[in-house]
Image (cartoon, rainbow, N blue to C red; front, side):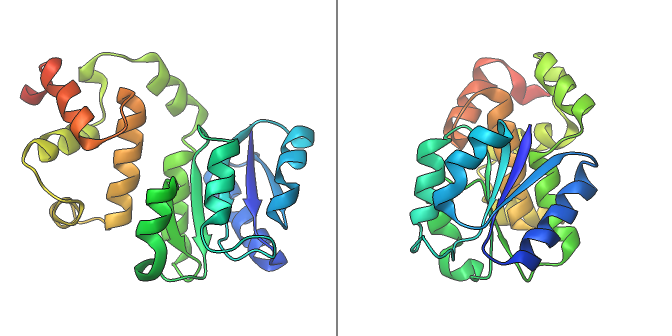
Length: 199
């Protein structure tokens, strides 16, 4: 499996490659300077596990890069790492299908934390895939389900857990993937149907 870093700035590509390899040492990381060459690069370099995409590329405009990547690879997680401010375009990126929005100005540990969610250690990913019982949910996932039931917003949850709001979004992405659902409403329905709200 391969991580693709799509950015036209060589220094940023190198920096992101180093951060990915801190999360998963030895993981294959491929740099792509423009979006138009992504598809052919994937054919040569292998199945994608994660895309890290800059919004401002020579051959993209606005959210066109997000739409293009999700159209070609709808099931592959997409992390936006860009110089644009979250207040300007984070909501639009997530609405367009991105899984996480990170500013390039974020501290390295913040970027690492975001990447780690989409790049679990091999043994962790295997355990997650092989367990189906609700008792096997992580402590954080159980907390999220209970907080969903309380109707708390992402900001409320972030405050209660003393984590950032973007980390809450990432936790929800993992929970939804774990349950095979696409929204808070579906996750709550799943939890109620399976009697999980007593956990």
